[in-house]
Length: 355
Ligand code: AMP
Image (cartoon, rainbow, N blue to C red; front, side):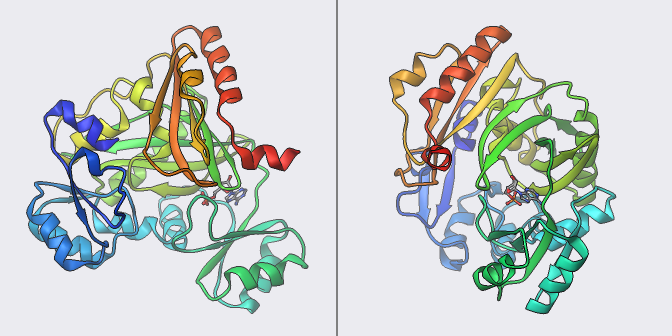
């Protein structure tokens, strides 16, 4: 999606991806290599004028190597904080961004102690490499502790209070090379089993200014360049930061059709030192992820205001295969489109739950 946004700006792309079937490969030159393969990294960097990542777990050594050949954004400090839940939460605390109560868990004894202070229910999470609900276990009673420890113990962990939040929301901010910033409207998100299912833009939401203020603190503190997403739980009038993503983010996919400038184009503008584009919403937008199996293309396209984006990935349970955005200026027609789309896009793991 970055490449698709870049072509109209006259940009061309080289991708480093360890997958033979990399979905970006048809859009540019594909260099097949792991993110720690120094030979392929060098080949890649020699071809680049500017480097960016859409994955925070690129090793620091590799970023250093890349940065010798071309400017690389976002900077290492941003990736280091984002890839470790403990460092990330400590950064939030340092900037006075509220978080759910949490504790460090490095041993079974730590787990007992943390539960005693945080209480049930709680959620045990690996500090690194967790995404889409992977590396997490909910503990609701003392009986769950052994099972959760057997599953996750051994890796560095944190225990968080499991919140009964009202909503999950996120905000995307973008900061250019000169330090100029812009913020997208607040987005409301629905997750299930740790996976983002759907997002809706909520421009002018009463919590938007609060959320954008927190993103601004992060962008400034990190000297960040590019798009960054910050996800929150809403508890009354309070936002508690869950995690940040130092990259374009799934909860901002609606911006392709639903904002003056998409998150992808603005990320490219930022890392290239170009002026940022407007971030205001254009009408109403909602985005629904296609997960596990593909819908009937004709059924999706029959919905007024629907735009489909397929990622050319082989279907497999739980895998994000694409997304659909419904966009429109007429609220009634837009809501009807969302309703219709929800009937066409099937998340089998959700329906199995309720059957
Ligand atoms: P994460 O990987 O931390 O973003 O978690 C994935 C999803 O799990 C979140 O979007 C929430 O839906 C749920 N979740 C994570 N942490 C908590 C928590 N402390 N309380 C309630 N739900 C949570």
